[in-house]
Length: 320
Image (cartoon, rainbow, N blue to C red; front, side):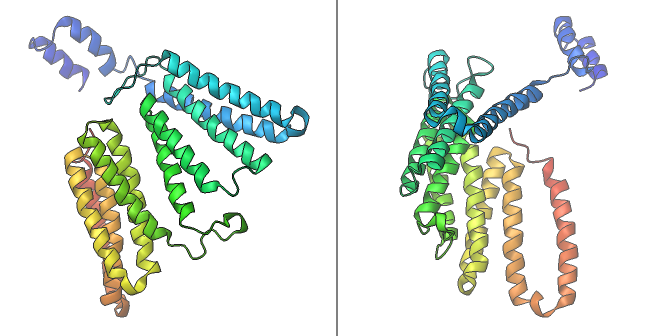
């Protein structure tokens, strides 16, 4: 809306003069919001603090002492969680607004320090070498609790990542520290089942009305992991690649349903790219492999189709 349109609304008595005086500086760009810039700086500050603390510990570990550094990190972490518990609102299954502007950043700092302490203990004392999967599961459980208790999407992302790491470590050889992490593993199957399981959990929690605003984050991770697993299966299990093609098409349909219900172009983009890769693999195996000319026309037309897709649907699907 322009300032002129706003003035016309006032002249037609659709808004009051008081409302016009409040809105006019915004639409005339006399007042500019720096909300996202400040949030970015705060997140960057948290990341720089934890990174700087890690570098400081690494460079001065012999002078300061291991127990002193570990105690200092633990004290800061405990102070962070004590502060957010003391000043935060009680748990609610609905979305909870932060009581203070920097509340979310204190939560994130406490969680990142929790990881730093674990990394310190592993690096210095190798406490988790033989119990890596159990430690990862405990970390995931802690992050899930913190995400729901303090209503924090960034911590939820850390929790899902930690849980995915637990399953990948559990299904891979345990000699990860001897560079045998991927030997004989079937991580693409784990990724597919994990994506389906994560989607099921998100659907259940959404139906129960528990943190419904978390559902988008669940689906975002689930679809990325699911499609990565299916696409990897196309090339790992070439003898049965048709099964993975069908799984990808099923995922594309789910993306279409979610894109329409949530007005999310991102989900539609995921489905389009995964479907394009699956279709290309099928055509390459059946038709295009023996016809170089068709490869040329297919590449040309598919690029044009992708551009049309972006232009056509970008304005239709916008996440609410």
